[in-house]
Figure 1 (spheres, rainbow, N blue to C red):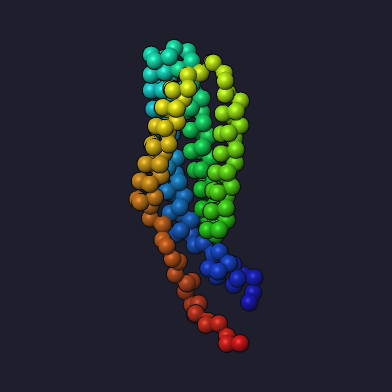
Figure 2: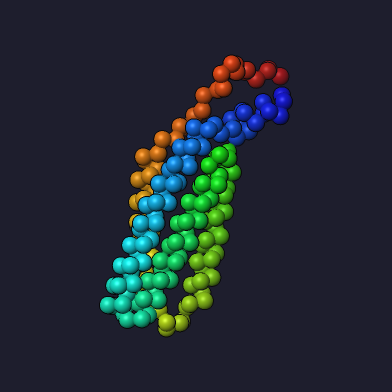
Length: 165
């Protein structure tokens, strides 16, 4: 089997252009929705934070929106970068990115633990709204996406059953 032929075989992770294009469009739509959500989180979070807790509420809203931006936009970037890669590469990148983000989140929470410059309740509210909002956007765009589940064989290629041993 030639190297070129091996690259085109699904077992080796061949991704056709239609699948890559659909995946990129899906993550692009997610990015647009998430940017709108992040702006709304920032504006509403700062406004509500100011009314509820003063300056600590503003800092909490900024911290929550920043964490939400880091989490959501990292996922979108990883999805765009790995759109034309085999599913095991894309899944590994997304899972590795998720683990890295959780480590960063714990580090940030350890750093700000016990500090009084932010309001914990406003931060919690912004993060909860961000989680629910981004999950809704991701599900909506994944359901709307036109990404094929299987790729047809390139024209002229015949299925070769495995040789009996």
